[in-house]
Length: 112
Image 1 (cartoon, rainbow, N blue to C red):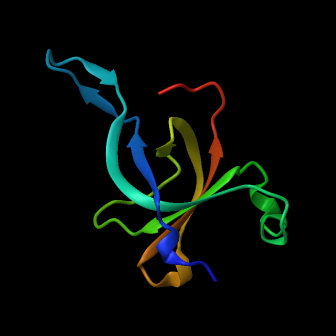
Image 2 (image 1 turned 135 degrees about the horizontal axis):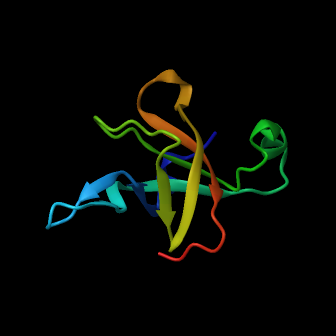
């Protein structure tokens, strides 16, 4: 059982959706959808990670409170500690609509 008191990592959930700049040109810019506190667990060789073999490319797990009116999808990414993580899957923890669990892959060579 995870303690939700461990949500002490700050993350930005970011979209790369096109946005218009001041001159009306459409540019692909990063847009922060939400900044939240999350629980972060890096991949390691324990049994739980072994059971998630289907997501073998995942390098980190994030858990955070569900954000009203924000759908967490694989088109978004997470920025945490200056590193970028591509979202591989997102699901409602225990189907209660309170917390979201995200499996993500650290993107190498990305500097933000």
